[in-house]
Picture 1 (cartoon, rainbow, N blue to C red):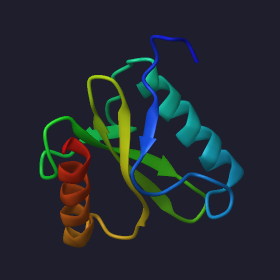
Picture 2 (picture 1 turned 180 degrees about the vertical axis):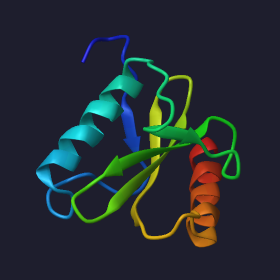
Picture 3 (picture 1 turned 90 degrees about the horizontal axis):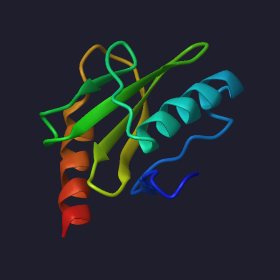
Picture 4 (picture 1 turned 45 degrees about the vertical axis):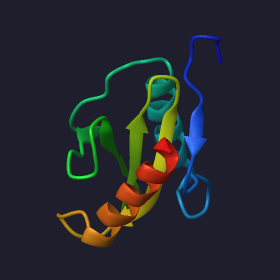
Length: 109
Protein backbone atom coordinates (compact mmCIF):
# COMPACT_ATOMS: atom_id res chain seq x y z
CA UNK A 1 0.00 0.00 0.00
CA UNK A 2 1.43 3.37 -0.94
CA UNK A 3 1.12 6.42 1.27
CA UNK A 4 -1.46 7.90 -1.15
CA UNK A 5 -3.82 4.92 -0.80
CA UNK A 6 -6.89 5.28 1.39
CA UNK A 7 -7.10 2.80 4.27
CA UNK A 8 -10.12 0.53 4.67
CA UNK A 9 -12.15 1.23 7.81
CA UNK A 10 -14.32 -1.76 8.74
CA UNK A 11 -17.36 -0.53 10.67
CA UNK A 12 -19.06 -3.90 10.13
CA UNK A 13 -18.47 -7.15 8.26
CA UNK A 14 -15.47 -8.97 6.87
CA UNK A 15 -14.41 -10.73 3.71
CA UNK A 16 -12.92 -14.15 4.42
CA UNK A 17 -13.22 -17.77 3.33
CA UNK A 18 -15.66 -19.16 4.36
CA UNK A 19 -18.33 -17.86 3.88
CA UNK A 20 -16.86 -16.31 0.70
CA UNK A 21 -15.33 -18.77 -1.73
CA UNK A 22 -11.65 -18.20 -2.38
CA UNK A 23 -12.41 -16.76 -5.84
CA UNK A 24 -15.04 -14.35 -4.48
CA UNK A 25 -12.70 -13.24 -1.69
CA UNK A 26 -9.97 -12.52 -4.23
CA UNK A 27 -12.38 -10.55 -6.44
CA UNK A 28 -13.63 -8.54 -3.43
CA UNK A 29 -10.04 -7.83 -2.40
CA UNK A 30 -9.15 -6.71 -5.92
CA UNK A 31 -12.14 -4.32 -6.06
CA UNK A 32 -11.46 -2.93 -2.58
CA UNK A 33 -7.83 -2.37 -3.52
CA UNK A 34 -8.91 -0.40 -6.59
CA UNK A 35 -11.08 1.77 -4.34
CA UNK A 36 -8.13 2.38 -2.03
CA UNK A 37 -6.09 3.61 -4.99
CA UNK A 38 -8.85 6.09 -5.90
CA UNK A 39 -10.31 4.25 -8.90
CA UNK A 40 -13.98 4.80 -9.68
CA UNK A 41 -15.73 1.47 -10.05
CA UNK A 42 -18.92 1.39 -12.10
CA UNK A 43 -21.56 -1.13 -13.10
CA UNK A 44 -21.64 -4.07 -13.12
CA UNK A 45 -19.18 -4.20 -10.19
CA UNK A 46 -20.48 -1.25 -8.18
CA UNK A 47 -23.47 1.04 -8.09
CA UNK A 48 -24.35 4.17 -6.09
CA UNK A 49 -26.58 3.81 -3.03
CA UNK A 50 -28.05 7.31 -2.56
CA UNK A 51 -30.75 5.78 -0.34
CA UNK A 52 -28.00 5.37 2.29
CA UNK A 53 -26.13 8.62 1.69
CA UNK A 54 -23.92 10.69 -0.55
CA UNK A 55 -20.78 8.81 -1.65
CA UNK A 56 -22.26 5.45 -0.59
CA UNK A 57 -22.00 2.53 -2.98
CA UNK A 58 -22.58 -1.21 -3.21
CA UNK A 59 -19.88 -3.56 -4.50
CA UNK A 60 -21.27 -6.65 -6.24
CA UNK A 61 -19.31 -9.85 -5.87
CA UNK A 62 -20.72 -12.98 -7.50
CA UNK A 63 -19.91 -16.26 -5.79
CA UNK A 64 -20.69 -19.87 -6.68
CA UNK A 65 -24.16 -19.96 -5.15
CA UNK A 66 -24.67 -16.40 -3.80
CA UNK A 67 -24.16 -12.80 -4.61
CA UNK A 68 -22.30 -10.80 -1.99
CA UNK A 69 -22.76 -7.10 -1.41
CA UNK A 70 -20.30 -4.79 0.31
CA UNK A 71 -21.80 -1.43 1.22
CA UNK A 72 -19.12 1.24 1.43
CA UNK A 73 -18.74 4.98 1.89
CA UNK A 74 -15.99 6.96 0.15
CA UNK A 75 -14.61 9.44 2.66
CA UNK A 76 -11.87 11.99 1.89
CA UNK A 77 -9.25 9.88 3.62
CA UNK A 78 -10.70 6.35 3.85
CA UNK A 79 -12.99 3.72 2.35
CA UNK A 80 -15.51 2.87 5.08
CA UNK A 81 -17.12 -0.58 4.98
CA UNK A 82 -20.63 -0.32 6.42
CA UNK A 83 -21.97 -3.83 5.75
CA UNK A 84 -21.19 -7.14 4.05
CA UNK A 85 -24.06 -9.49 3.28
CA UNK A 86 -25.36 -12.12 0.87
CA UNK A 87 -28.07 -10.59 -1.27
CA UNK A 88 -31.05 -12.87 -1.83
CA UNK A 89 -33.50 -10.57 -3.60
CA UNK A 90 -33.39 -7.91 -6.34
CA UNK A 91 -33.95 -5.10 -3.85
CA UNK A 92 -31.62 -4.28 -0.97
CA UNK A 93 -33.53 -5.06 2.26
CA UNK A 94 -34.76 -1.94 4.06
CA UNK A 95 -33.19 -3.24 7.31
CA UNK A 96 -29.75 -3.19 5.64
CA UNK A 97 -30.30 0.35 4.36
CA UNK A 98 -31.43 1.53 7.81
CA UNK A 99 -28.51 -0.06 9.63
CA UNK A 100 -26.02 1.38 7.12
CA UNK A 101 -27.49 4.86 7.60
CA UNK A 102 -27.01 4.53 11.37
CA UNK A 103 -23.45 3.28 10.99
CA UNK A 104 -22.62 6.10 8.58
CA UNK A 105 -24.03 8.70 11.00
CA UNK A 106 -22.03 7.16 13.85
CA UNK A 107 -18.86 7.12 11.72
CA UNK A 108 -19.24 10.79 10.74
CA UNK A 109 -19.61 11.84 14.38
